[in-house]
Image (cartoon, rainbow, N blue to C red; front, side, top):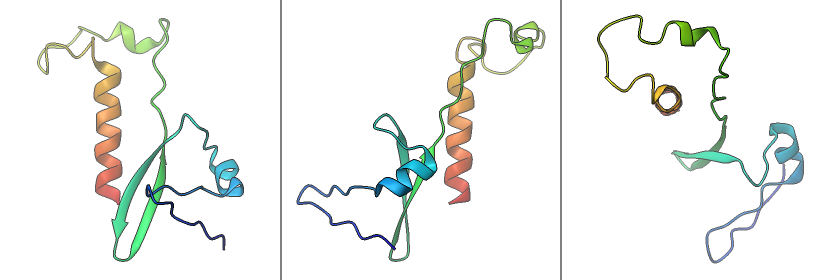
Length: 90
């Protein structure tokens, strides 16, 4: 078990072994949740943008209904859905 000291600004250093095991870098985002007397950190995995040759683009606009900006904001909607799912599982 590693111990981290909290600074006067509320910051801690995540031990190197933990950062390496999860692939956490200075550009990573972590979800912070509280459960009882524990603080839990979970790495948020970025949604990979779709390439121009992804087959999903053949389906864009093929159906009706839904939000009118779905094709423009597809990746944002996916990311929001993932974040909602993570919050529900915590």
